[in-house]
Length: 419
Image: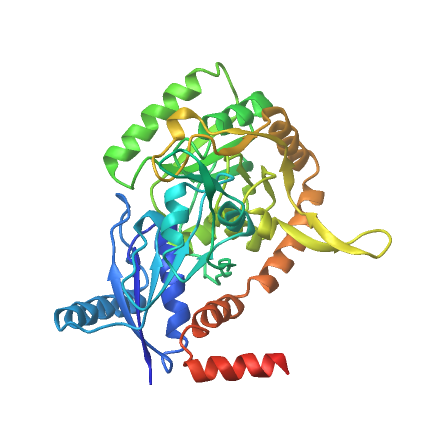
């Protein structure tokens, strides 16, 4: 008999958590012989909604309508998969699995541990994110302020990354005056460290009229108002750097997946550049990696899961090596303005990339592009194999399926494993 599984997440949202929700739904769809799928779509900030995949969008719509009828008729569900930040986890079924990108800092909040321990399992996106759960502890005291133990993660945490996508390019014509361009893809915010990103670029290439920085960014969404806001902000920031010959381009709003594929494979786009303070996973960096684009980024947090690949050294021994321009950093407390009650705690830490290191790594890519391309090709080969879509979808099915077996099946599996 099929298990009724309800997914709760921002499946329609043009956001990272939206993509995460759609990944979970795609995995479940591969085994509709096992699962009867339902969907509660939730809002995610002020992001827009997806539109380009008509067939998939129609399927989501049908799941939402089906779920509304099921809830109206007081149907019960066997399991929930909740794709969101842990603050929003709820027990809405006998078995509940939280699916989260985790945190970009080095530790999660007490509330996240508390809510995660109410679930049966946590699936997160990177080893960095997993450590945030498993290595965080907070002292527990009684009414007399006596230490009685600690708050820590008690439930299993599993890592499942994103899959590679095969997307045909669009016929979009991106025009850039400069022949050698760095690309930064990020929603504008404190964590993405955008002002320092621009500073590092300008200081390194100030007098080079053939080098550009493409900022694929927005403040909140793709509206005209948001674009005007970004133009004004960039004009103000650029003005603080004085005279320059290098170019800065604003590429505002959301691109479709075919348009993004076109941009990443553009002959004048030479390197992905990011000095963010931290990433749970880093989807734009991941897309650059499997597109074969050289990468310069902070040597810390979730993206290291796919930027380090097994390579043989001179002695023939295999060990993981970073196939990207590694920007050095210091690990320090998050800025006061980044503290987010219940999410980013005041004493948590993230990376502060070295501007000098960032400039050096960009310069190395520019001066020896053949070497950068060689690294990128090796990384692409590894990522295409390790994060192949069917492998990732199967990992989700395996992570879920163990909770759908009857007690008798679980006993038989345990016995077989013992033998």
